[in-house]
Length: 382
Ligand SMILES: [Zn+2]
Ligand SMILES: [Zn+2]
Image 1 (cartoon, helix red, strand yellow):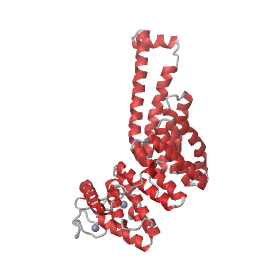
Image 2 (spheres, helix red, strand yellow):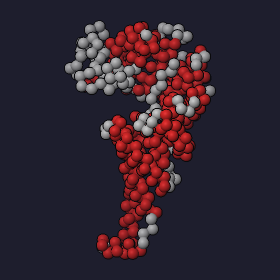
Image 3 (cartoon, helix red, strand yellow):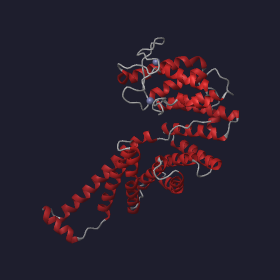
Image 4 (tube, rainbow, N blue to C red):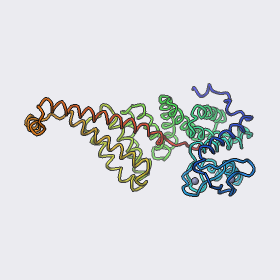
């Protein structure tokens, strides 16, 4: 196991460095939010500039309008107090906004990750909260795209949890986060192996109908898709999607995602047949109105499905042009209409088909670049 070799506590987690990492992360977050927070006040202490720390405001959740502006130190204090009151109920405050109930993202999540680590770094290894704090920090670093740092924190966490002999479910959730970080770092083979391990582990532990099993199956399928291992991705999705539809329902986000990924695997496979392309169109046409009703027309899933539908319809047309043998009478009459010779007409049609194919490839590449937003989310172990 590679992660067992990386036993030493990484430099990054040295207790004496926590305060400095925290200050740097807060400065970065405040600077990144400056435009959004100009002229606003903290909803916790009601000041614009924090009276003790002099820090500016941040906002990194789903709050809109005048809501959700705060100081990182105020958010951290709030989370700390909530955990002191009840660790179980209070813990999500380190990752989730109290006002909009959505997870913090980007550099704000990173600043809160360091705040959390700084708060609990003195706890002994056997204290569960220390592991939870490492998880919040790992997620925050990943959110801020510091994936190398996230990796070292998560590997250290996994090593520690294994040594402590925590329940298998906690190990699996931690491995799942590690796989997500591998994936972000482009280490897709390692990611797929770990997702596979997590999926089979969860399946054995919780059974095929448990929401975690379905989630890990989708993560694994998504990774196979990114590796262009389309056959395996399709096979897995064919197996788990009917379970998701039955257990979670057809309007559920995960069910829709599985069907969406299945359609993508169908049409992006270079060996896709005309039948595959038609099935992809049918699937996308089926889920597009559901996504629109459930999430709204501007949601990334709705617009993503629409984008794929455009691509695959075009691909279907291009394929038809390439494979259809045009009857000689059609060629002759069309050449008369356009004033071209029959050879010129056929050359033009072939050129157009080639251009359409190039456009399809371009759009598919763009769609792939947008996929980062659709990476699996972080699990909370324990
Ligand atoms: Zn404040
Ligand atoms: Zn919020």
